[in-house]
Amino acid sequence: MTVRRMKAYTGEQGYVYQYYFVGKRPAMRQGAEAPATEYVFDVTADRKTMFSVSVFLERSATAAWASRHGRNLTEAEEYAAAKMRLLRGFDEIENMMAEGRSLAVEVPVLEELLGPLGIA
Image 1 (cartoon, helix red, strand yellow):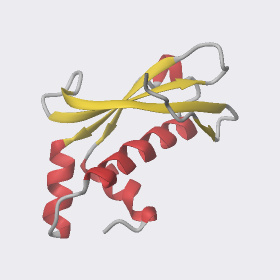
Image 2 (image 1 turned 90 degrees about the horizontal axis):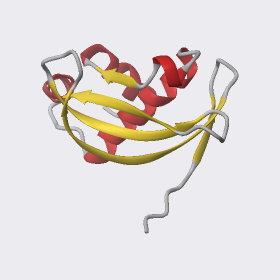
Image 3 (image 1 turned 135 degrees about the vertical axis):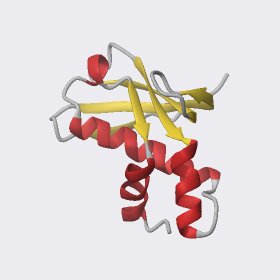
Image 4 (image 1 turned 180 degrees about the vertical axis):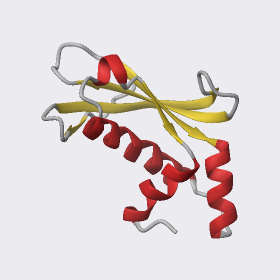
């Protein structure tokens, strides 16, 4: 049995989210042709209803980042980008369960997410 570490985050919309990382897998982002790595998080805003949120880290974004910085992102840095995108979703999306189940990390967004973490 896997023990998952539940984390909490207070979004700018006023909700206190609890979430944990479920896993990652290769995927094709829905509605897009670009291959990506899908990071899956289970989330609750009310401690009753749990739902999944998929964060798609597009390969084109990681390739562009590697080209710009002269190295590939590590696995931990890729996870950090996915997690930061999830937290940004908590801040920006009022109803995550209805509107935030699929989030993308595209080329311009990746730099914005990793910059404050000092990843260069």
